[in-house]
Image (tube, rainbow, N blue to C red; front, side, top):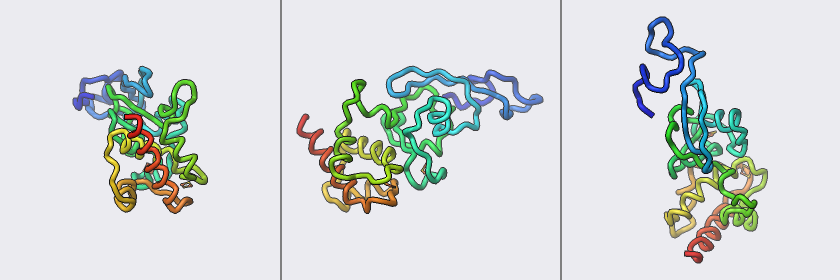
Amino acid sequence: MNGNHGTNHLDAEPVDGDTRYGPDDRIAISLTVNGEKVEAAVSPRLLLSDFLRGDLGLTGTHVGCEHGVCGACTVHLDGVPARSCLTMAVQVDGMEVRTVEGLAGSDGTLHPVQRAFRECHGLQCGFCTPGFLMAVTHLVENEELAETDDGVRAQLAGNLCRCTGYMGIVAATRRAAAEIASKG
Ligand code: FES
Ligand code: FES
């Protein structure tokens, strides 16, 4: 997205000649979400988490703390995990967004990380799970997983779980990494 607020993607005139956006202004954005092209006109105040959940119906992305602490809202932006509750929808113009709905295959086959979480009891209530799945998927797909369990816990410290005690999550992360590595 071009940072020039005065000219780029602006569908409405500035308020009274002011260069700031008003509450009714909309900005056109074009992005890819889970492989599908999306075009929308959004308020510059709209959070990416609200855009995904409210506008696109992708409610797999959860919203917990709404201020960047819990990690439940984690998605991938151009392949990098990011807090969708701290990202404005207009910031992802031109980007590739991957949400938890994009992990499973089109035939419903679970991603190895999803399967491992199920098999290793990496979830209980499941509220934190979409964020963990996105964080872990990034680590294992990029072969960045730490060698020790303490290292894995440190890598996942940006995601909070109030149920599991993390043992199942660490075990699931290791199992998924092993499966992905075995398939080369
Ligand atoms: S909802 Fe985004 S970090 Fe908690
Ligand atoms: S499984 Fe309940 S918060 Fe993590």
